[in-house]
Every structure is written in structure tokens, then in C-alpha cells.
Image 1: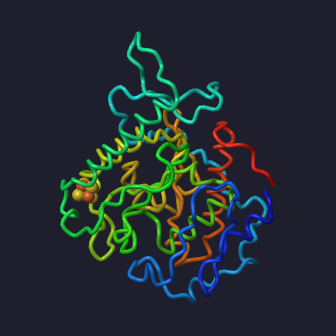
Image 2 (image 1 turned 90 degrees about the vertical axis):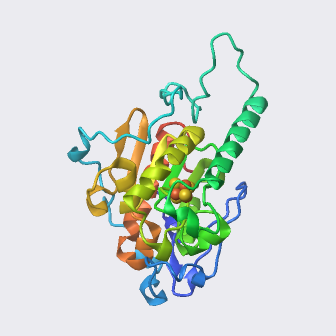
Image 3 (image 1 turned 135 degrees about the horizontal axis):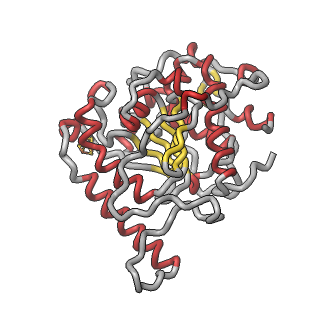
Amino acid sequence: MAEGLKEDYAVDGEGAKQPRQHPESKGSIVALPAEAEENHPAIESPEENALTAQSFEVAEGSAAPPSESEEGLSVPPPEMEEGSAAPPSESEEGLSAPPPEMEEGLSVPPPAQQRKSEELLFQEFIAQCESCDRCGLAAGRSNVVVWRGNIKAPLMIIGEGPGAEEDLQGKPFVGRSGQLLDQLLLAWDIREENFHICNIVKCRPPENRAPKPDEAENCRPLLTRQFNLVKPRVILLMGATAYKYFTHDNSGITKVRGKWIEKSGFWIMPTFHPAYILRDPRRKNDLWEDMGAARRKLTELKLLPELDT
Ligand code: SF4
């Protein structure tokens, strides 16, 4: 692993250090002031976030290997919509997601036409989210927070729910946690076109509390639809709440983080929420290693090129 990369994933008491901006990266890095998430309960004082570049030194072999306990785990991704295609086999080199199943006899549309119809489908999905009032969270929202990144992406990152800043901007992970996440993504050369970020629930829970089970359940059909539109192969679940609601497993995040769950060709990894890392920087190397493992998985699946180290 390139040592230089780790230097990019650091924050100090003055705020987040700017990550490397990849010259070809389409997206801009969201860099909000530190007070942007001050209402988030997971964020504590700047003193507690005083990370240094040295403290990112990772001990040899510190990455958590997959454990035997993964075996036999049956943790499904959100239910596949009827008719949606299974993920491609590894022999389908270069495919990041299968095309929608074509009716027999229809010719395959040219890529531009297909892209357009995918965008239309996604716009339709956004409209569905924006008009949703399936749970009580609808009443308190400023915006429905659906996604950022790329519509189609090999990596899907799922958090628990929008905070104050996310609610205001209508985008997930745009506060200090989002800054840290962006640093990690850039440091591992995962560009905006490679990821799709969303949450278990799309409306902000009051007082930034965790979503309740009925709220997560009501929002699940939307996440399922989103999943089927994005067609990821690798899924990172950020934090205990996202893990619990996605997998229906109540195991603690410390126990399951960094362990791959393979299900029907999807690769799912729970990891710490960046807000937790801001609160307890001692675990930042774990998040670093987990993002690295996701990057290596994307390479292994031939969805991203080898890291240029
Ligand atoms: S959280 Fe989800 S289910 Fe609840 S109102 Fe918002 S979009 Fe609908």
C-alpha cells in the first residue's frame, strides 16, 4: 500500500486536511466549515478530533482478515426487484453492473440511449422519494436526501440517515463526516464516478437520533429500488445502524467490521461510521483499512484499475 496515500487521510484540530484532488476527478470535494455538523451527536469537540499524520501509521498486519464466522452468514442485500438481473459473473470483465434484462427479441439499445433511459428511471425514482410520506420523518424534513456520487456505480456506501447539514443541502455525507469520507475515497483513488452514497432513511430524524425500526422498514422499498438502479457490486455499510437495518443482524459493529459478507455475487462490508472516527480517532486505521479492502475488492472484481502507487 502506498504510504503517501495515508497522509491524505488526516484531520487536525483546525479542520480537515484537504485530500488529493485527482486531476481527472469530475466531482468537487465538499469542504464545509467545522460547525456544519455541530448538532450531530456523534461529533465531539475539536480537541477530540486532533488527529495527526503520524497517528495514521498502521501496524503490519493490522487489517482484519475475514474470519471463519463469516461462513454460513446469510445476509442478503435489499430485495432485488422483480426481473432485475443478477450481478455479472467475474468472467464478464469490465462490467460494473448488468444491463436491465431485455425482453426476448428486442435489440439491445445503444449505450447513449440506455444511459438516457437509466437517467430517466433515476429521475422518476427521485420524484418518488421527494413525494414520499410513508413515515413520520416526512413532517420534519427540509429536503429528502437521496444520494450523491454517480447514478450507476460499482461501490455503494450506505449510512444511517441525514443530519442537519444533509437535510439543508439535500445530499448525504456533506458535513465533517462527509469530509473525512471524501478524504478516504480520494486517498484510495475511488473517484466520484465510482461511488454512490446514500442512507438507510432519506429524511432527517429529529435531534439527529438513529432511525427507528418502522422508519427504516418504511424506507426500505426506496433503498431496494435505489440498489437496483445503481447496481453496485461492493457495498460499504457505515456504522452499526446501517449494518443492523441492511442485514437485520444485531451484532455489534466492532465485532463485524472489516469482515466481508458475500451474497449472490455482492460483497458487503460493515465498517465504522466516519462520525465515530471523529469521536474516537483511535479507530481511524480500522476505517482506513476497510476502505482499502473495498478498493482492493473493486480491483479484484475488475471494476476499478490497479492502484497506481
Ligand atoms: S424516511 Fe423514507 S419512508 Fe420516511 S418519509 Fe422519508 S423517504 Fe419516506
